[in-house]
Structures are given as C-alpha cells and as structure tokens.
Image (cartoon, rainbow, N blue to C red):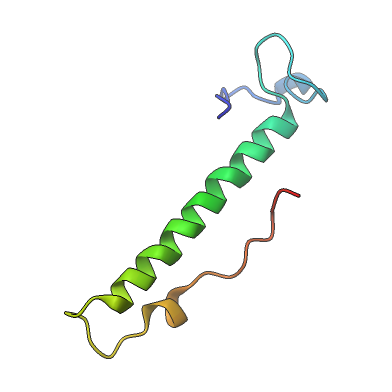
Length: 76
C-alpha cells in the first residue's frame, strides 16, 4: 500500500507516470485505493450474509436491503 503524504500532488509532485524518489505515483495511489475499496465492499457483503444466516435474527434480509451497488472503479 502506498503512503500518501498530505502534500501529494502539490506542484505536480507524485503525478509522474512512474514512482520516483520514493514517493508513489498517481497510478499506484489509485490502484491501492481500488484495492482497499474492493476489500471493504467484499467484507461488508460477507457481514450481511452472515447476519442473514444468524439464527437469532428473524424477518430481515440484510443482504438484499443493504448490499451496496457494484463498484464503479475496478482494476482490469
């Protein structure tokens, strides 16, 4: 995962095509952000499925009512 400083992008820093001088490039930051978002999305859906399967919870279909929309940003 890339460590992004608060000054990332200031004056064009970090916006180069390749990582340089030990700072992540924009593409690296975006790819890492997509990975993080995908993981959170996957874990949320798994949690909702588990809640639906829990014997102590009745008459609620969490997965169908709370599942977020498909991710718009994906790595290909």
